[in-house]
Image (tube, rainbow, N blue to C red):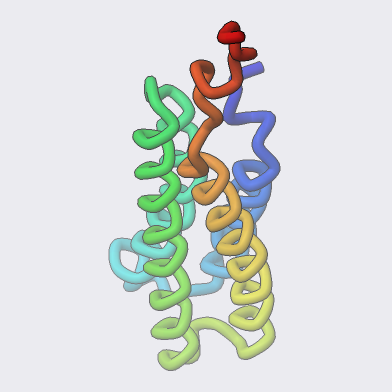
Length: 131
């Protein structure tokens, strides 16, 4: 098992992508290379960037990929709103995606914060040897 597969937020992002794929199945065929593709690509990008981020050498680098995942999530919700305006998505479908996205957004924010939290210095945690 790879490290990213242990992340609950990665699992949620994969499930979210599945929900986006399901929601876009009924889109008009002339949107296959337009909004359908864009929604699907940005949804898949959320989990993909988390996976890529786990391969980075530092927590700061990983946090940057978490930010990119967050940006993909925001892009996806914006695209879903456009799809709703065009009546490709129902109000219920949009609400479902929004609820899932809010959960993922909170998880991404928490992960980013934990990655950027200062780590205790090993020098500061050493017992003092002075008299």
